[in-house]
Image (tube, rainbow, N blue to C red; front, side, top):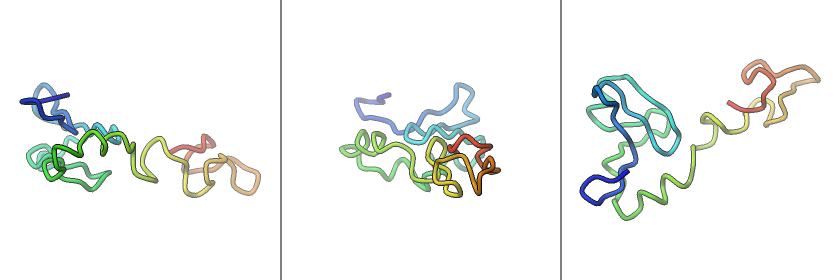
Length: 94
């Protein structure tokens, strides 16, 4: 997504009440996150990312421990001591 020829690392919902991060996919409905273009999962103010580095930042994918990454408790195996891992429900992903 581009605005004035500059890549945006986020998208604001059509009604302006949410913001979605293009790196980790997280959507926040927190009014301050929307106003400040902030991602609480990536801990990043989107406007602070230099325009020249935005696509590269998006391409890094979610930071470790963020949705879609291996569960830190079971290290992505889905099992802890032979039983399904509780935090990731046996999927190995969080």
